[in-house]
Length: 300
Image 1 (spheres, rainbow, N blue to C red):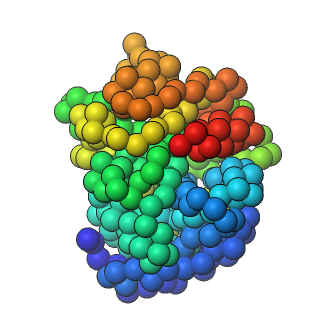
Image 2: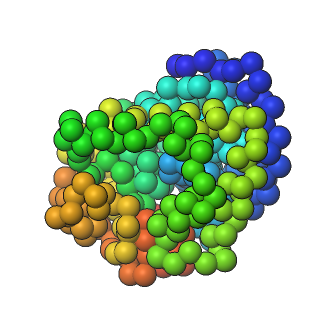
């Protein structure tokens, strides 16, 4: 499960971040805590953010969907306002604690929305405990693009805690901008929040969990299990996604091909390719994606 450091709760800069919704804290096993927002009423939806992201990344979706649904939006363990530590934060780790959170909230069945790494976590949850997951809404999900042993080694060697923690401010802005069709003032808060948390004494543990997330996605592939997905599944990719597929390793692939592979492998699925949207498809085109999600939920 990993060890939590002795100063895991002294994360002043993380705690000071301004969120668009009130975050509560659930005490979980092994002295861990998970921050979450619980908004709206109706059918429950669990929202899982992606790698190196956090709960506010869903804010334009929650604002609309919480009018009709009960939205549980989390900071995964190791991220945002949740507890920090040198956790072996793979997909199983995150799925286990998300199941635990929902049990704490006495929510037995729910829809799951996941972005990028959060999409791979959502897929793992649906495979492991299908009786709990009613449907999946996958935004640019990881886990569909596959990698050879050599490619995985390249990823692992380049993804170190030091590389994540020590990236320059200028390079971080460049890296962040690659997530969007166009990085404008709407997304600026993500850069500003990074500038705040990098001075926190828990920042290295946050960076450790991010590195573990990359390794976890590679070590726990779900591709060969996609045929086991019994839940209705919505798959959304932005047509201008610059992160999936990996342009360095897979020059012959494109995002639409990845989406078509996902739709073919997952039995009861529908694919939506969204124009003028990048990797943060649900953020770039929130209004359009919200309408697609609501229609999908109404039908399922």
